[in-house]
Length: 327
Image 1: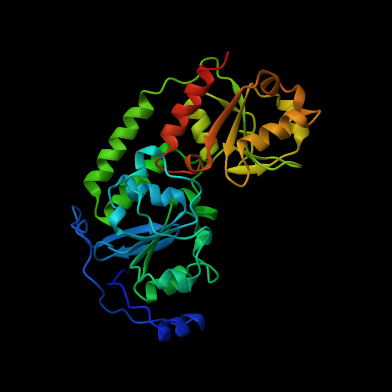
Image 2 (image 1 turned 180 degrees about the vertical axis):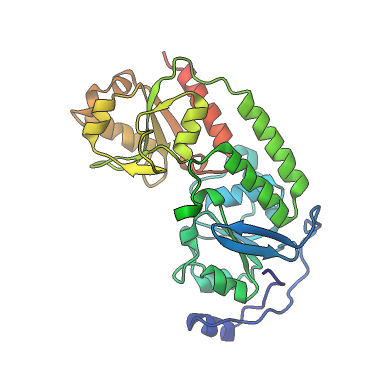
């Protein structure tokens, strides 16, 4: 249940440290964008948790790039009071909208830093963001008037998408539009992305591909039911680890050598760059002989575009364009 934001005081901080609850009190008026085009209350089931939003959230904290970028794409940037755990720079299309983002942490912020911003809603990219060591457990946040929502693509256990599809991504956009009072913008964005996806021409010949996320001794790769599989399938690639029933998995280099992919998709992250992965592939005697390595058939995608979100269609388009540019 979402109520008005509360004033975070030293007393509230001490109560939260002990695992208790604080009361809600009014704060400043919401920004001008807090004029809703949707109806409230809104109730959704999110990763097995029932979330009821009684009024449009006006002080939102976003965790992970996927959630931040979605709200910016919906035109809700002035309602984001803090962002954290960003996976990379914003794309050019959202750079202006996010120029004034208040980045409060490079990782998951703690409860004190989070609640000091008097949020009325927290939108997390992973379920693990909502722990006692992170921004707080969801039921405790609800008890002090702070609503929460997790990207449905990141739900775990029985609530995990199996497989993840673009319909899941589009449904999240629509659901976020309803929760945050931007239904018209969400509908427009979904229509636009569906059109772009429908107009995508997959890479000819259905080349086999390895999705190389990270790792050196044992590569961490895209498996058969997550966003890597979804993006590769849209781009017309055959995932060499499609038979692994997971989103990502760790494999041995011998399995990669045996698969001998035509293309290698490299996830470019600040903590594990595409260049470092290329160096690993080209220095390892076993992987030096891979067809994709010898031909330098590398496709590079920024990390933030590879987790489920508003940049996945763009990522699939980029894969197709990069393959078309191969000699």
